Amino acid sequence: MSELRITTDKAAIDIALVHRFLSETSTWSRGVPLATVQRSIEHSLCFSGFVGADQVAFARVISDHATFANLVDVFVLPEHRGRGYSKALMQAVMGFPALQGLRRFTLATGDAHGLYEGFGFTAPLRPQSLMERYFPNLYTSQG
Image (cartoon, rainbow, N blue to C red; front, side, top):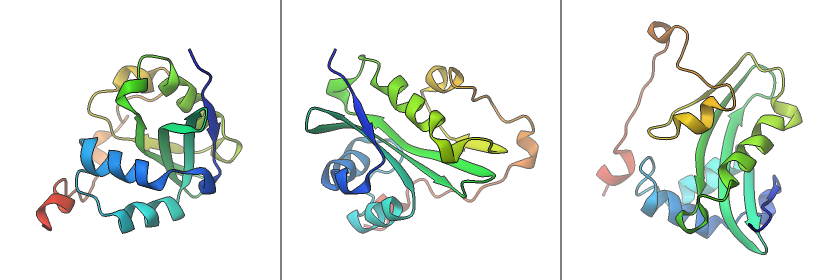
């Protein structure tokens, strides 16, 4: 297994790759415009995983760095899965100094519950207290 190098340096992000994955491959951001991805990166704490010079993984955290964080846009490119990179990426996220001592850390996942449970994530204690505005087809319905 090649070593995964993880950085939070936004200048290192292969924005074209992140946009391509999110807009074409992901199940949660299909059709997302490049400008939206760029703006989301600008206003988030980003973790990029590299093997050699190639970016193969990404995660983004939206946080006030004091009380709350939301983990989004986590992926490992399909051809690099099964090598422990998602766990290494999550270790970097969960160990990041500015994300320690938060009262609430959230995420949404359709199929990676086992990965996130390994890092202490559970179903909401009081789901009846959570609300959302959610537009799952926002990017594809704008045509």
